[in-house]
Length: 150
Image (cartoon, rainbow, N blue to C red; front, side, top):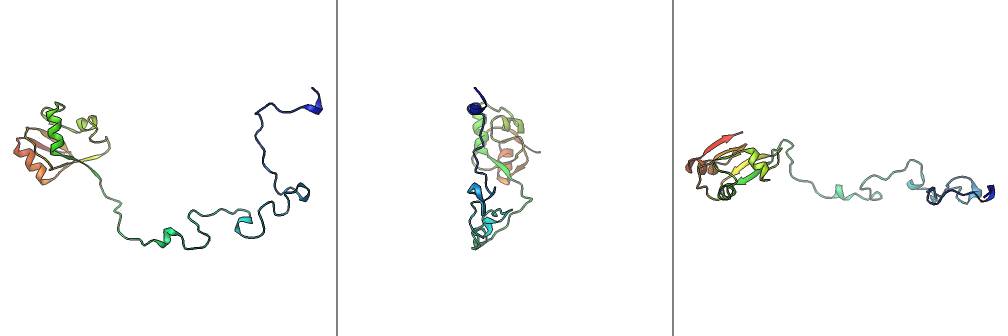
């Protein structure tokens, strides 16, 4: 090995970029492969997201309507038939609280829970949740249960 045949180790170098704009003799001088004129040839050019070459962008062409309430609270709905199924399977005996709902994956730890009135409840159960529908509350109390709002 001598100075005439030194070369870096295999895989140690990665830069195989064309060196643009380094004089006419390099073959990549002048316009530096950007073509002539236009926005793309200028320095500092970056295309805006959704830009369609000056045509009215899709996001502005499509009509807007409706209203999005930023203060809306999303509730995870759980029906009475689901609660009755938990009782039948022996998951709950007398109380249904938030920790049981999280364990059975009916709700996440950060969600708000609302008990809905679909189905029938035949067992006496003490139910704890954030909200109840009127029919669900009546059905739980008719079965001899108790309603606790969190």
